[in-house]
Structure formats: structure tokens, C-alpha cells
Amino acid sequence: MADFILASASPRRKEILTNAGFSFETIPSDADENIAGDLSDEETVKELAKRKARYILSRYPGRIVFGCDTVVAVDGKILGKPENDEAAFNMLKMLSGRTHRVSTGVCIISEEKEICFCDTTQVTFYQLSDETVRSYIATGECSDKAGAYGIQGYGSVLVKEIKGDYFSVMGLPVAKAARALGEFGINARVVLSVGK
Amino acid sequence: MADFILASASPRRKEILTNAGFSFETIPSDADENIAGDLSDEETVKELAKRKARYILSRYPGRIVFGCDTVVAVDGKILGKPENDEAAFNMLKMLSGRTHRVSTGVCIISEEKEICFCDTTQVTFYQLSDETVRSYIATGECSDKAGAYGIQGYGSVLVKEIKGDYFSVMGLPVAKAARALGEFGINARVVLSVGK
Image (cartoon, rainbow over all chains, first blue to last red; front, side):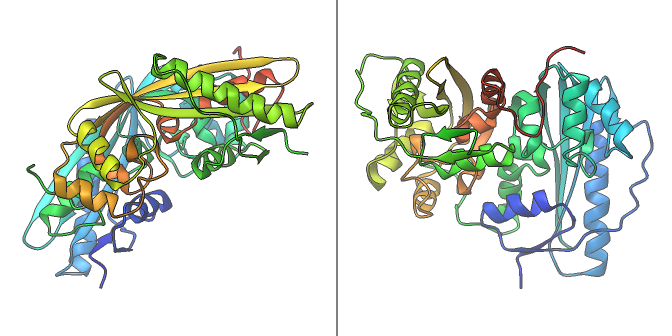
């Protein structure tokens, strides 16, 4: 049996955990994602990560479940996935030439234990012309991504600099998550012991 | 014919340019990599990137050639690829719990034009126990990488934070490189025009 269940349909999250050497299975969560509008970005992703994990744990009792959620925030406004190309255009022009926050909440739970945390990374975009944004939208990469971009594909050329965890921007802060999984007795190939 | 020649044998560099949508071919360079010891990390990688590009251009005149080199530096000491497991162990313990520099030099040349630059990104490691370092070395990931780690694989759990360009740490600052390739009339899927 796999060590834990990843409660997410995101191929990027699956790829990050696989590349780090974890053994897991993937079962997307159908948890309610409606949330009060007055929560901060960090509160929002922690709450949604927890809901996703609890939804799967209730159906697979006895397992360890890993929930995750990512949003982009700029000017105190939270950006989720764009509904259509026009929304994607508006989001990308909002991010152009400045720094925004990408927050990823992680919640790892079993029936005995719960570890939840949030990672926030700063991402600075180049100035993007209308033509640049339109050609990027035409790649089809925007639609399933918070803030309408993916840092790992065609979107790599939009980003000038990050401060924080690249993998968190992709959707899963793997270094912090690996340490939390260690608390559940789960290790990948690299053993994260403390001490000399 | 491909738009340019990447003068590098690194599968990571190939992957980064492919994911960004560029059309190129790969021909590793046999340029002399011996270099005076008194150059800074940034001078070193720019010089080596230039040598690699020129070596290939001399054999394929009329083409556009992309040369690249990456080193890790800490305490003013430059770390290349480790010679063996012991050297890898010493490098990783040197990087443990602190911030180092990763510098990547890029040199794009044709018979008419030359654009060379360097990108430096700061990488902060978690504190790494001897056991953690040994288990990481056992993954086999160290041997062909400057500083004895790869940020994209098992090494992802060693890194606490970066400030700069993730792809530059992997070996190729793709956003800056895409803008330089644009100066040679080469574009990938995303058109990097300036203006509104």
C-alpha cells in the first residue's frame, strides 16, 4: 500500500512528490471550495487544504492524507483559476511588472494527528505587453492554474525572480512537506534527520 | 534546421529550453575548461560559456550558438562538479544551513553578434545532518552537478529558499536567455515584445 493519499488532481503536485521519491496514490477531493471572502490568502489555502484532506480521510479511514491548495494574491485580492481567456488576460496584466504572493497551504492528517502549514513565496514578473500575454494565453497553459500562469512551462519566461520556494509556486512546498511527512514516519530517499 | 545549437551535454538545460518551446539541437562542446584561479565566479562562468559557444561556432559557421556554464560559490570558493563521493560530502556539508551563490553564464553568438551575461541566484540550504548528506549522495544525483546537488530532483528537499531564478540554479536562466535569443530573431511560443 502507498504511504499516503494525495488529495489532489494536479499533475504538477504528483510530479513534485514523485521526483522527490515519495510513494503515494492520488485521489482527488470533492470537498466544498466555497469560502468566506474575508479570509486572508494564507487562511484560505490552509482552510481549503484541510477540507480536502478531511474529505478523503472520511472516506479512507486509517490512512494518512495530504491536502493542498494554492492561490495567488496581489493588492490584497486573491486570484484563483481564471474562468476564461478574458479573465486570464486581466489577471496576467494585473501581475505584469510587479511582485505578487503565491501561498500554498498543506494539511497532512491521519486519525491521530494533523500537521497544517502555509508557505508564501514572492514572485516578480517582467513587464508583459498585451501581445506577450495573448501569445501566452494561446499556449493553453493558463486555464487550470491559480493566477493564470504556470512557472514551470511556457510561463518560465514571464518570471524575473522569486523569493522563497519554487516548488510552492508550482503547487507544493516539497522541502517543508517532506519534513512534515517525516513526523508521520514517512521518508523518501533522502533521510531528513536532525543533528550532526 | 533548428533555430540554434545548444553547446552543452546537460539534460537539464535541454529540458528547460524544450519546456519553454524553443527549437534547437544539442552539440556538446569540447572547449578547454582550464581557467585562471583568480577569476570571480561570475567571470569564470561567462568566460567558459563564451569558450563553449566559440568552439562550436568555429565548427558550424553560419549558425547561432548558445553556450552556458554554472558554478556554485561559497566563502569566495568556487565549487564545480565533485570528483567522488567524499568531495560531494565535503561540498554539501559546506553548503549546509547557509546561503550560497549559483552563477550561470550564458553566451549566445553568431558570426555577426555576441550577447553574453551572467545570472546569480542565492540559494539557502536547510541544516543537513551527516545521515541526510549520505542518503542524498546514495541517490547518485551529485556526480554531474556543480556544488554536488540538483535542485530539481531528490535535492529539492535540501533547499529552504532561493532568491532569484530557479532555472538558473538548474543551469540555464531561461527568462533572460529568451530575451537575448529574441535579439537574434529567435522566439519560442511566447512572444516577448515590449510596449503596452
